Image (cartoon, rainbow, N blue to C red):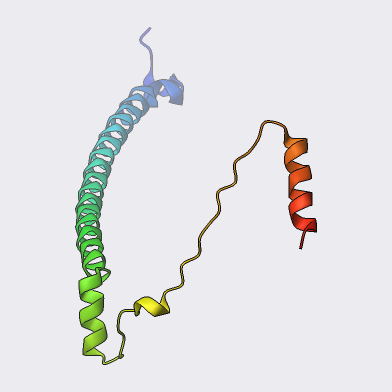
Length: 125
């Protein structure tokens, strides 16, 4: 007697169709994921290039501004700027300069003697 299709279970009739649709979804999802990752890599690469360009531009600006600050801090430029603003600044006269002589203190090997010498120096008026 021949088998009747109506007597077969639903899982047996729709099994191949479900397997094929699942396989298509799996392959399609993998393809979409691959394309999305490639686009993401390209987008990130563009961001890296833009930021590297901005870094180089910032470094060039820093160098240029550093050179400009060095020029503006030079004594020649400061003198010229003081004359432009009519500040009346002039170099100090030799009599206006106070020079302080610093005495060199030599340390001795015996620190107790040195302490005693300091006390003796401080006590004598």
